[in-house]
Amino acid sequence: MEAGNQTEVLEFILLGISEDPELQPFIFGLFLSMFLVTVLGNLLIILAICSDPHLHTPMYFFLSNLSLVDICFSTTIVPKMLVNIHTENKAISYMDCLTQVYFSMFFPILDTLLLTIMAYDRFVAICHPLHYTVIMNPCLCGLLVFVTWFVGVMTSLLHILLMMHLSFRRDLEIPHFFCELTQVLKLACSDIFLNNSLIYFMTCVLGVFPVIGILFSYSQIASSIRKMSSLGGKQKAFSTCGSHLSVVSLFYGTGVGVYFTSAVTHSPQKVSVASVMYTVVTPMLNPFIYSLRNKDVKGALGRLLSRATSHL
Image (cartoon, rainbow, N blue to C red; front, side, top):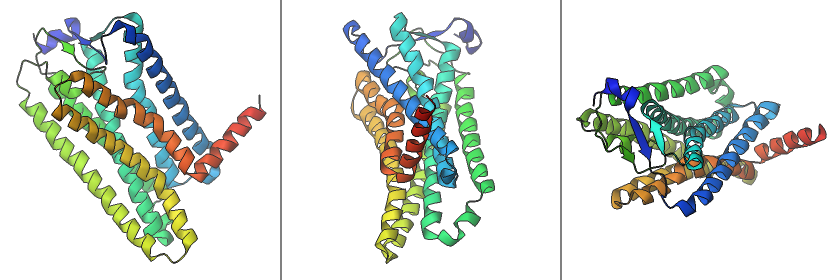
């Protein structure tokens, strides 16, 4: 089956987390609830940052971008899953599947790079506080975010362009709740050496180097905090870094968990359940982490909600 004909006739079947009909209402309600919490929570973070002048700083500029990415990532996956459950139709068209593959790579890449930039921002703020406003100027912040989106667009596009040249066999069932790149490639009947090579290369570049950057930034931050004589200064440094460290740990922890789950088990259902952690749970928890652990965000949210209630 040639790629040129696939856009017209080819469909994939998303098997989902479970094929048990009795579990479908529960899964639908659970994912709908988590999706609504994710969108509402991250939207509140964005509105709080935009409406509060005290939060118009580089750290919260990056945080608002991270919240936007989390909303988009969940929107890429969850609504289609909910529609499939509600209509009892598990089919997804070839182009829709490619679109989902594209965005399910694009937004995690943005997450990775934004978390790295945020670690660098904390490094400059704590280790070079006198030069912070000069180094992290609006021009540099805008450039860093632009580069992040550019890298995400080009990397994801390269994967899709390689996939469009593949042929697929007749058995087109994907044992997952969304079109995940490696699962789709398993259905190809043509050579996927270039695809796998690109996956390994980009995993090393966009996985290893950001982690090294984050670890370096926090090693320098820890060294600077130890040298601080003021207890208040140490507490302030910990409070600004604590929420970011929690999000980083959650993001990479769930990602590593999915990788090892897929490596040690041959059960697609277990891999799908593990994938829920980084595709749905992590974007949902990020707003709670920042609102509970960060006094500035908590205060801005309180002021935003009080203004909203006063106008009712």
